[in-house]
Image 1 (cartoon, rainbow over the protein chains, first blue to last red):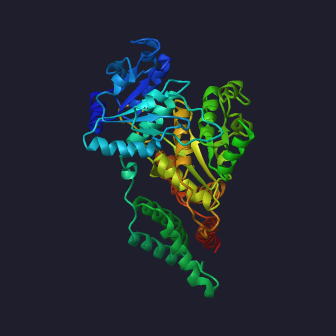
Image 2: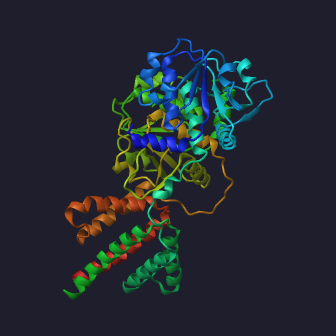
Image 3: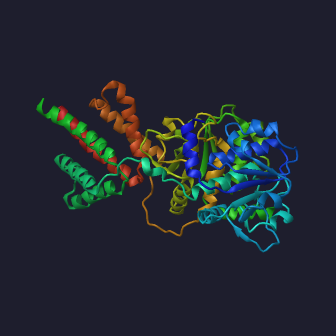
Length: 255
Length: 255
């Protein structure tokens, strides 16, 4: 990653939620979780009691390109220790629990996290080990649950996918306006001018016929144009097309 | 999956978007995409020209639990063939393109898809092959783009992750309660036919000039048409307009 990109990502960052992997088993999954996080600019990972110890070369190999996340990782012995400095903790859970915690979607949770972080709180999200998910002992230390709404007949989300969805929602919670690069939308006056030109040209070739339908045909044409999400560039293209067809006709006429 | 769960998932279903994998390479990725879809109750997959042919045992092995998706998969030779019956097509793309299509986030796109499907439209989402993503030739056949907002310094989403995020947003999007009285939306094949006719007519009047720009001018024209939310009625109007201008030219020629 270039220094510039680095800076860009860091600029968004400011304070971020910490993602905590609790007793993960496979190094590959730790690496995949790091990649999933970094895709959305999240870089603060903590790992509680990883089965295969730390450092883990398989995690590093899998995290290709997102080494930044693993370079900063904090390893802890217990969940309590890992979340000790945090003000608010969400626990991800696949299945319904017999606990009265507030249950949020990833979207709701990350919107809430943005708010809290904006208020200066330190926020974290707990993710359980691959197979079993978080234990109740971990969940009762959390302030709220995150549950991904899935097909009740099939929920096969793995650890990295769960991390991916929550990280995605973190960035979504202040998603940049991606449509901002679009071309200038056409002004209504430009669209109307195009309509009038088309009507004029089509009148010349007696397109609007029979006469008692001419008005509604012209209305349909103008309505068609104004319904379309056209840009000023499109207007030029359209004029070019009509001009080409019409000029050729003109040329033929004078030949 | 139990019969009850099955029924539950199917009940949500009703009409759904079709997910189209364009020239995917690894069978494993097709299987992983099927799982990602079925996590969110999506079951209609089409595959365009899979590198390793079809059926693909690696896809089946990877799709464990989501066999339902692969059992119903439709294989096509070309993107045009695969989307021919659809009314509105989104193309997922990682990088900025030099095309003026509407760019949506997965969230915006799936909210839009819910609306369209509620109005009776058939909707699809194109996903490109693993490394390169969709080619421009595929993108210009789409009506809108989907771009996942990611860390500009690191975007490593793979095919199944991209499918996962869009499928997740499909389920997230609430079905709007609309009963709009819209005209029949145009099928992609009709729009493409209109584009081809326009290109043919414009070629006759040497519109595509200079020669080294002809290909990109034609691409812009087809892209313009597929971006527009046109109805079958619009197609007739458009053909009428072109026919009027062109027939008149013919008449003048023979005068």
